[in-house]
Structures are given as C-alpha cells and as structure tokens.
Image (spheres, rainbow, N blue to C red):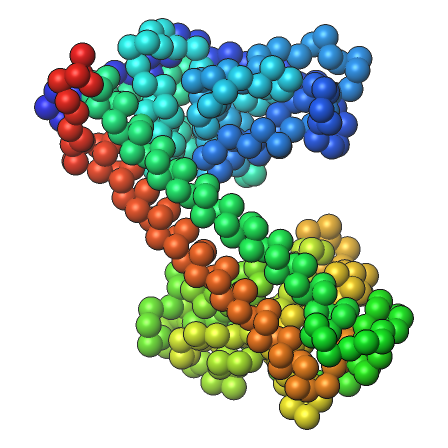
Length: 432
C-alpha cells in the first residue's frame, strides 16, 4: 500500500511512449565541435548522463539519425549486462548534435507539467526498481540482457503529490551536485599528482640539481642512476589462491586478497575473499604494513600495478596473482619504487613485457618484472620524493572517503524518501 496521500500507478500511466534510437555506422572516436554523434550505451551506465560517451557518425549515415536527448526526459538502456540493463539517466538540457542508438530509449510523458520527471528518474534508478528490471530482463547470452517496452511500462510505483515530488528531487539533486563537486576535486588532484610524479621522477627535488642527462627511460638528474628493478630486489614472494567463499572475511578471520585490492593505486583491504572454515591458512603469505605488492596478472592496462600496503587488517594473505617485492633497504625504499612503477616510462615497459593470448588477461613473469628499468636517486632523495607524492595521495584518499560517505548518504536518502518512510514537508505556496 502507498503511504498516506500517495497513489499507485503503472509507468504506462505516466509515460506515453518510449522513443527508440537508430543503429548507425560511426567512427571509433568522440565527436569534434560541429559534428553529429551517436551515444554509446555507457552514456547512461552509471546514473549521471555522460554526453562525452559518443561516437562520430559517418557522413553516409547522417540522414538516418533520429531522437536527440531533450531537457527533462529520461534515457533508459534497454540492452546491457544483467546488472546494467534498465540503467537510466535524467537529461538536464537539449543536445541537438547527439542522437540515441537503438539500444537506448527516451521517455515521452503523458502530462509532463503534472509530474516531476526528475523525481521519476530517481525512482527508476532506485535499487528496488533496478532489481525488478534486472529480474525481468531476458536473453540467452550470459553477458547481454534485454528489456521490452511492455515489461518496463508494466512496472508500478508509488507516486507522491507533485510538490512532494519536486522536494524529493531537489534534495537528491543537491546530493548529486555535491558528489559531482567532490569528484571534480579528486580529478583535479589526480592531474596535479600525475604532473608532480612526472616532474619529480625526471627532474628530482626542485633546487637539488643543476644538470640532467638522457637515459634509456628518459631525462633524469646527473647524480641518479638507471637500473633494472632486479638491482634493488632481494627476493619476490608469491601468494596463494585456494577456493574461497565469495564474501569478504569478517574481522579476525583469514582472507585472501583479490587483484582488485591493488588495481587502483591504493591498497584496498576490503577487496578479499574469506578463507573457508576448516581450511588451514598460510601465515607466510600474510601481508603486512609497508609491503610492496604487484599484480602479476590482469588486463594490459592494469597488469604490473603496484601498491604500498597501509592500514592492513591482520590475517589477509596475498593471492597467487600478487607478488610481494622484498627490497634491499640500502638501495631503494618501497615507497619510492611504488611511485616509480607508476610512471609512463615504467608502464610502457610493463605493458610491452606482459604476455598472454587472451585480450582481457595478461601476465608478467618475475624475470620480466626484474628487467624493468627504473630511476634510482640517492636514498635521501627517494625519501623526499616519496613523501611529497604521498602527501597528495593521502589528500586524494581523504576526498575519496568523503565521496564514499556522500554516496552512502544519498543511497540511504533514496530508500527512505522514495518509499515515503521519511516524508518531506512543503509550504502552502509550494503546494499551490
């Protein structure tokens, strides 16, 4: 039953039509100014409309395009993976030079003035509705599912009075604005970090060097050396990959780290799988504070990624897709080598050295990893460089923690506001 004052309606009572796009031939690049583009499915994948996810339509197909994104409408993905089929976004302005493909629908509302379409966009993006759409999607492919118009329009929703719709939409929209601003700060800090990494690993600490030299991996200060990574490695430890439970290990229990724990440049201990009850752990594979971990198997872009372990709970073991580098402390610090392995020069070497017939999974052997050339400043400068880069890395992590908190708050608000569990108030003027 809907809450007091709310009604119950099918989406077909609110949406008169779902306009389809057209599949057209396009170039594998985004549009330049003045060009006509067709949206990719990823333009609606993650809850916010991303018009940059498009491809330039080739001239012979320009006459075939139809259905541009329009202000106040909702775009819905009718075909995607099980978890993403039915994904939707609210369109905040007109995009006359972009067009929908046949995998995307756009709403046409029966009475747009009697409905907050932005409120409905949050309803369609809510976990309960997303679960229902995912469950009703059909398809024989394990990776691609489809929704029909009839299935989507048959869904029923609780509908609050119009003033309450507007108020709910305004609250959730303000959360989205805060999320966008926080993400923009993170993006800016990442740009600063990349620039600082490039400068410090090619020029050294400002004011410390007056002369530089060219090496096989680029420019560096005269007093530095260029060495294979094996020069600073004492030994490499391998991990262990037993058949584990899908869920993470509770505090105090043994777990095995997934490769995603090192994928994104910071250690993520929550990315682990619980060791089954009764299976003996291997304590020698347990990771500790300050360990330098490298993924030996991943996609081409992610293989060889490294992280310095920080804030690790006890009883987490490295998997066999992770390598732990034990360094000679008189030659290099783990913190500096971690940053050195993320430079463009190191990434290019790692990607060239990675092997594997699969397009989605590559491997780098210990021998190849040892051969990667890295810059080696004196130890005191390694420490100073790592400290400067760690400072901005920590700020990025703090902003990401804030972002996670805001997203969690928005998720909670979605649940209580769209269900009517928490009611918003509005004035008589707003109701009028």
